[in-house]
Length: 351
Image (cartoon, rainbow, N blue to C red; front, side, top):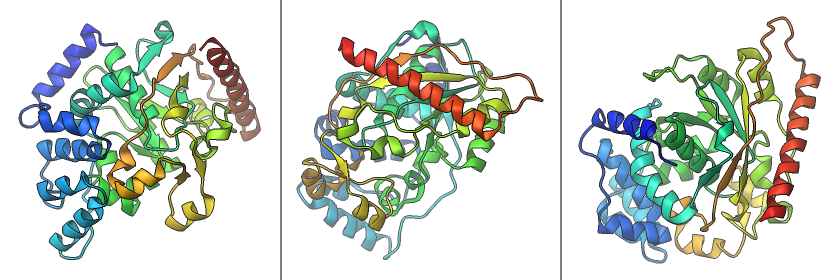
């Protein structure tokens, strides 16, 4: 789904990126095909463009690849840092690094592994601002979000910022797994009202003046939480995206993802343990036995085919004196949910 416009945009932004472009070598290809190595790819790419003295080193990367070795790597890094956690540096969204990460890391993963593709692209508008509303599932690292953001960037040259659960920014597991402020630098926006509104209201730094493109899951955390038994059954939609669309006059672009439920199949949420470790969800499935031996696989997911069906744009109201109340916003959100559920059922019937 690469067109000439997006390729030129990527090339021009890469010319301004710090240092030389990241080039896959034999070790990177090995990590791509060996699930415990995906976390190595993420960190090595970051270290290519950023100074990261608290990050993982080569000895620890090697330990990732053997059963139980991650625990030794974690101990090694903790001792090396003087019995403390990695520093929490201040990080701001960097569109250039987002483009570099997409082209140099996400691109190979999505091409050879998740096989993402956009359908009904004629429904894509020419520019933003937009709230892209998509069903979210998989009970794993948010690959359905990352894939759609990458495909929209390739198809339209957009820079997309996903709305993410706060745990993906500050949970201790994430702080040790990934570089400091990794999610923020890649464009993640905390799923909290003030951060959402701040992202909407802040001026864009993009030269093509495309406007804000925010990727939002109307189901919230209820989507991944529903588990395998309720796959492709949309949960109740939140109303915040309707209210913000109305407040800032930003249209909504509905998208249906087919294939995301197979990112972590046969999973159920283990609620008591999830609350104990303070994670948004904690799936229990046969794959968890591999995760116990290789904790670096926390960013991995099963191979699947991610297809995204673009629905017609829903324009926002332009009358400043007709702000929707919560009841009206709730009704509109649930109407959209019913519409997308019908589309999901139709797409699955054609599969």
